[in-house]
Image (cartoon, rainbow, N blue to C red; front, side, top):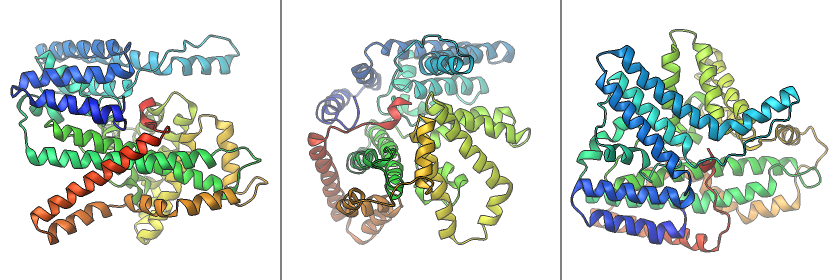
Length: 467
């Protein structure tokens, strides 16, 4: 089940809210939210929900073990090793087994059969959440949770279970046990959810369909401008797909009394690649910083080695294919070069030049991300940079561009923080009641447009579900 589905919008979510708020007791609410979350996951993964529960049980007891021996660090460390070993073994087995076998076969000429295991939805997210919990308990940053219902709720809450953001236990530990209903929070949650749904359905889905029309076409149909247009569409799709999902997750959290951290901060307004990665998928970036980069030595010891390890892992986390490794290392090289040389030069340049530089390398990076077949990536790059005998553009691109020109302007505007500024301006110049009615109208408009499109659309993927 996905948030942008009629089943979720008109059956699952209303039923969950009604059952949840029908009982004032926090323990009962936690039980209801946990039950609905497991139903939500089992809707798409009826078999692998057992794997999710096993992961929860394993790290719940690892946390208790670490807490029990907190004054004897050598023994407590065994709990961390246990958590890392099992979680990473599960992740490697289910996500990377085929990739490893295919790589070995390619390098050795052997013919091992790939296991062909179906990737459990959300495993990349919930394994990182439980690992961060056991490490934080070991570090003494959070106390071990002694109530299993509270712990499993932290892991399986459907708001963030299958595609993030990666929520750490310390972010919501107090709210698991002490949250109270707040009408302003609930109202803001509805607004944030409707905004995210609209971004996903109206912008990301449209961009995705346009992307498939132009990006990676065979030589008889492609053009230089068409490939660049398709790549731009993919850049819009992946941003509004993932940021829209994060908006919906954060909004749902507010409806139930949880406050998740922001995951995107207008990354396409960045003026460097360093700036971009401070704004894009923030929960993943901070996870690798706190649990990989700093423990390896950070900036103090072997910083270049540490940086490339982190970016290699960042790439492979996104998918079991060499293009993702290449994508991660691509950004690792640029970030290293910025740190060594380029940032000092960029500081002296106008913001417009810095922004063009950042956008060029960001968009080019999405080409590496898009193509799991490296030969197709190579042929597409040749077309994009005029190294293939293809036309500059054609009638199909011309027609698609002008048919979607207003939508494209709107999508580009939504990449900037103009939406938040517009709301701040309205709130300042309108009376409180008028502003509230304006927000209600906006929410109904976003929801109505999204529902109408969902009724007629067959193309409705969530890109990050496969990670």
